[in-house]
Image (tube, rainbow, N blue to C red; front, side, top):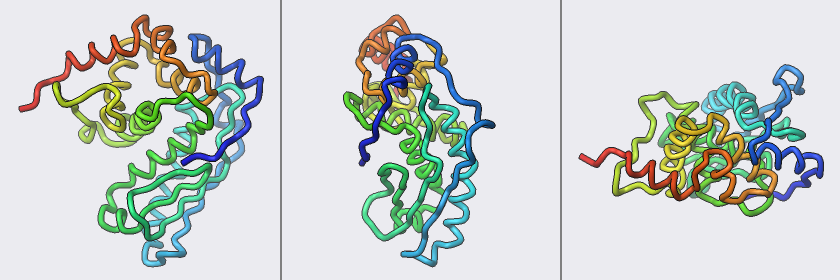
Length: 227
């Protein structure tokens, strides 16, 4: 879920340049006002200690994610609230608030990476269309699985079972491959295009020289077969 935000004309101009191969600028982290992470476990007081653990991780990783997904004229929310309560599912992000399932994290306390995924959604700040759902989740899971989580935990999609637009960790693996193979700024350019509402499939062609479908077929052809 997302709440609509206003996007300045100046940012739109800068975003176009970034998404079509121009330089992508970002404000140095040292010059930004400090961010604040608030963790609310009022509804589940027994999770207070866990909330402190999540707060520590969020305070460390939120600034890193901001630097990973920059944009000229873009400023990520300075305050993020993480709420734990009884609900179905895992977690969701709305504007600058992340809501987490108490049941999920009680049963899987090691799954702090799911909160890192949601922090990426806060920074993505996508409020306009078009923006493919698989790409939105793929970028957030790239932050989780290829930056935050240890290398041993990374997903390893198998041939015949994975498609580049399969979303989440599958698309994260595709994005990692495409970025390493063709353009080290690919994810920044895709993120900028999605954030500014100028995304089209041509962003892939401009950045890599190949269409999204061509890249997908090449990636899938190189996947290992399932044992």
